[in-house]
Amino acid sequence: MSSARKNNIAPTMSDVLDTYREPAVAKEPNAFEGPNKVQPKSYFANERTFLRWMNLAIILGGLAMGLLNFGDSVSTVSAIFLSLISVGIMLYGLYLFRWRAGKISRKDIGTYDDDNALRALTIIVFVALGLTFAFRITFSL
Image (cartoon, rainbow, N blue to C red; front, side, top):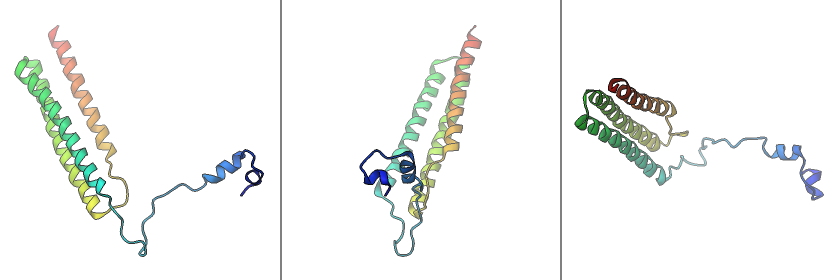
């Protein structure tokens, strides 16, 4: 314990930095600790995430069907793109659900996130919606 703490005065910067020297790192259990424990909430979180992906796919698919039924040729092209993206989101959601379920059942250590695919999917959706608006503005003039 430092002298600042013993004398009951405000800690110095070195006292503060000494408390943060070693970061908390998840460690693998040894033979005495037993296997990794998977909390039941992990399974439910995986299912909730899958349902959110399906919700997004259904919303995009509904938007695509609305464009297909009530639009002209420009809307038809946009509807085809959005329908393909919707099917892609459904397949990706299923893949992600099964991948996470496998990691949870194997009790793998680490994260269950797939950040790169999420970024790519976000960019694809924004590009598709941007092209829809661009087609509408360009071909309606």
